[in-house]
Image 1 (cartoon, one colour):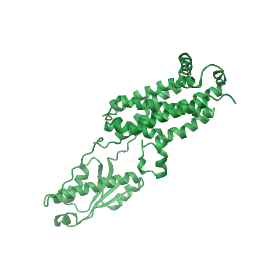
Image 2 (cartoon, rainbow, N blue to C red):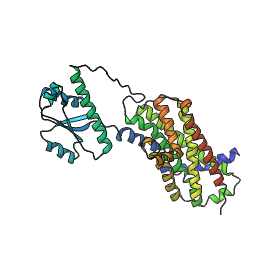
Image 3 (cartoon, rainbow, N blue to C red):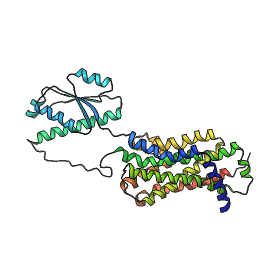
Image 4 (cartoon, one colour):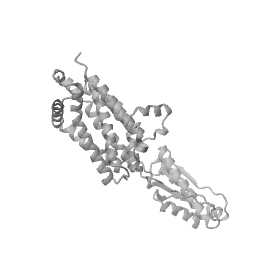
Length: 368
């Protein structure tokens, strides 16, 4: 391996990147845009639920129940005078949940008898509706326990403590995994165009006629995008910790080591696609299907792998982003190290080495 030849290839690729400012700005601006979207605009937290309460009892006991909804941060309460108001609000997407307090609520509570509080829920968005139902049922049960507890204290009291994400903010769960998606976009989508561009521009024949070896060409071309990937990772980490205030409890050196392994494999995979397709359009499409979409949908970044069908769960084991997401969330939120994440690090190392080897062999092929 000749260092001068690698430097020459790297300098050539650097000039290509500099002369394409749109791609460069997209690569550097991607972390800021995605983190801003998922950190501020897009949230999976279910709070400030549009709630309408129809209190048929109008007693002190029923008003205490209504007040418990108003005091909760999960519900934004308005009042109705009939069923029709709740139904109209749900049909117009102005109301997510309606609460109907029966006219015998106070009497039944005073006698210690069972009383039903009706919940009308808009099930158009099933996930949000399920969460809203759980919040409402939990609040009603808690209010009943507190009311009856004044007369008959409960012999057992359950106290809950949430670890690692005590505020239960979706941002803290999503942002660490988002770093893997950002790196996959930069790595696979940008590098998938490099060799294909050489073929389309007719300069690949000149490179193949030089003494440059395939591995030297691979290292030289990847070095520029590797630097871009590291810069994006630094930007993403700084924004995540200091701007979005995502808790970071682990070792930053482990984060960069995992990023090094992941970038090496992802960049090499993009080069492999570029060398195999010889077309920028085709390379971009294949890279989107085989790298970006699996990293976004099947890595555990947004959707829980445990809830996927068994066949899809088995397929996720060959997606490198799955292991990188596990490493990022483990280091960010739990502060764990190699003693827990050694298997994920081992897979990323094996993936990087295997893809580098396959890409080098593919680039040895001469013009047909």
